[in-house]
Image (tube, rainbow, N blue to C red; front, side, top):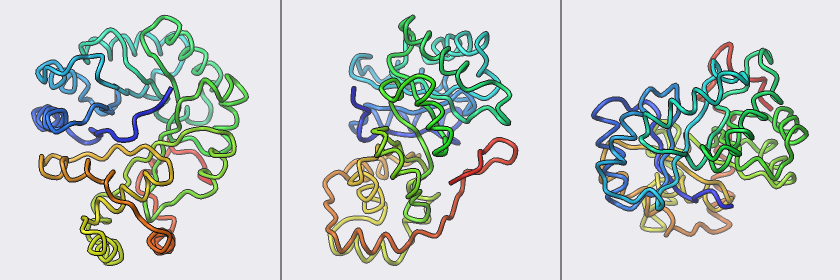
Length: 267
């Protein structure tokens, strides 16, 4: 199993904006789409996919289970509701969006429910999101690393998450990077602009290439078709060791996704 190298995210996209973004992404060549129950746009994503005409078997759809639905009796029904909104009989990947705050729902319970969802065929792969090293270790102990397709976490040039990255690599757990462009900060960064000029690229492409070259999947979003096209071309940018060393200096542990009362204790 291989998580797609590049996909389109839908965080913060609502209504017609979400529909238009996903349709544009599919038109320009994206085949992986990431959404979540809490984004409140699964129905719009489903509508965009249906109207795109792209065959379902060419797509890789990811959704994420919200913290209110992590218990054994809620997880599968909530996923079935997501499938109805997405207009599909299965998703390709289902993630625990955030660990249950305070361990209110035991992690093993949620993971076993995900395994059951996979056994039922309503998701092909399962994984986690926003897990620190301790929680990722707990997940591995509960169901085995071979059953964890990815850990989707915030990684950007300003939050390089080195301890978690090292642990995940040692455990052979794939990482998916979100907020790789740091809400657009990367686009304005002088160093990334300098590297972009060297490669005839854009700063966004440099940031995405930086993540991709480390083996992470990336899922940037945009409401602009031109940006979606440009981001997709990040795969043609090949950064050298000098570039990577320079980007390493940008790390300042600047975390953007840190919801109070929900986020775990970060590494």
